Amino acid sequence: MGLESPAWTAGVKRFSHEAMATVFEVQALHPDATYAAQAAHAAFDLVDRLERELTRFLPNSDVGRINALAAGQSTRVSPSTMDCLLVARQMYDVTGGAFDVSIGTGLPSLELAADESRVRASTGGVRIDLGGIGKGHAVDLMGELLEDWGIEAAVVHGGFSSVLALGAPAAQEGWPLTLSDPGPPIRVLVRLARRDTALGASGVRKGGHIVDPRTGKPAAGRRAAWAVLPRQAAHERSQAGCGGPRRAAAAAADALATAFMLMRLRDIGALCAASPGLEAWVLPEPARSGGPPEALHFGTPGSS
Image (cartoon, rainbow, N blue to C red; front, top):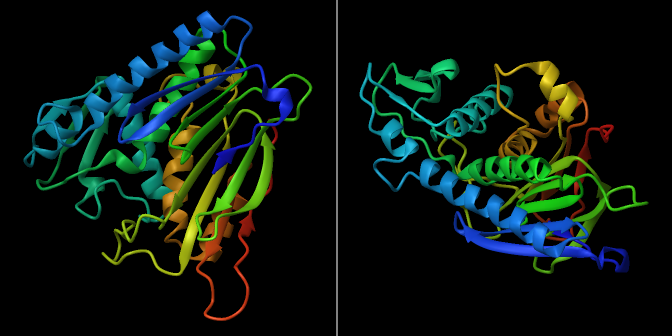
């Protein structure tokens, strides 16, 4: 997934930061470069804090404490970690278990008390890894922070696999985004112009690291998958109340792109049909003979 840079984006200020084993970037349209830089670095500070909370490699991180729970034990987590867990559980349910941050060790046995920011294990041995959703979660919160700073037009991404488009450049339909075959050969499959939209990408370019938690077998037959999801408008968020996750479009798109590497095509189509604005693209592995495959598309663009 990429961001094209035609001439009219010459005023975009770009800032980058390494975290979560990738490079996060803020591309913002703002007349004051110094102010934009301050906002971007505040967003990067937030990412660093999230990484400390969500990593499974630190025993005292939120995830580290969850993974140490025995049956009947509980632990408090930060509100942002609870938000991430709530989205992860929702994605587990809507994908029929194809997206499972516990990799089959028993996500449903974790009880999430959102009001108390507390996680309780009804059985022991649950081990979670939020790597499949953590970057999208960070991108969501970065987008909220940039809006709090008054930056209304920006693209935020974590390694281009988790992308959030805020607003749009003046006189443009949206930010120009591309979906590309991870190859070889690398080729652009789809060009999009989107605003207030999240995109998630998943693929097997780095090897068979995507495992179906329902079977224990690696993903097969697909080279890449993408999920595109409209972002909830600010007024819709306030009307929804505070009982659920925040504006979690990028986290959900992250999870769905992974699930789309594993789900049956008819189930992907049914999920898109039942979810207004949700779109999916699935790129099959090339056949032994014939030309390169084309991406299969599901869903219709949402209004934004």
